[in-house]
Length: 228
Image 1: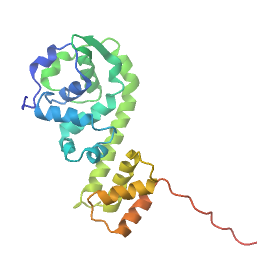
Image 2 (image 1 turned 180 degrees about the vertical axis):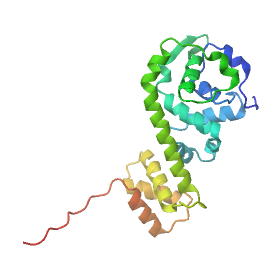
Image 3 (image 1 turned 60 degrees about the vertical axis):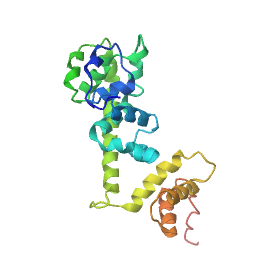
Image 4 (image 1 turned 90 degrees about the vertical axis):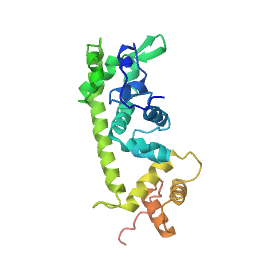
């Protein structure tokens, strides 16, 4: 297993890359390195576009997302997951994606690709026109993901100026409970997560946070109007 994270030169001679390999290569990570293999395993354990949710789902396995190249790779992978599959080609090792597609996509999103991939900057038939259909939406998704990540980072920063511990817990509990497929009510799922989360929360705090995160609240009785 390679321990060097720099992409090896043999990749540029391949007819096609898998979506996971191409995602890593355009941010300068060798897919067969130890970190590259760990990242690919992590991708298959995440079913949400939000890296914060991925951290909750995978615990310590998601520490790679604290490193900028891997966080960028995560956003690229989740953003092009649907669009890139339209550019599959048949190779000796099965269906892959033309490497030039990854480079063209990275260029359009203004990512700096590794120098080893420069020779792949050649036109891809129909890619430029077809990708333009997706690019505005993908850029908007990335912008929103980055804003969400910034918000979660501020909430989770215990020493920061904008620390809001209970709001942080409520957001995490809300997302985790939505993934819970049990027959329990939303509030029960939220309280269950809070009790198992490892946070030192008092029963009153759990109830308070669950009230904020609960999306299944009964709207209650309408206020009475003035007596006639």
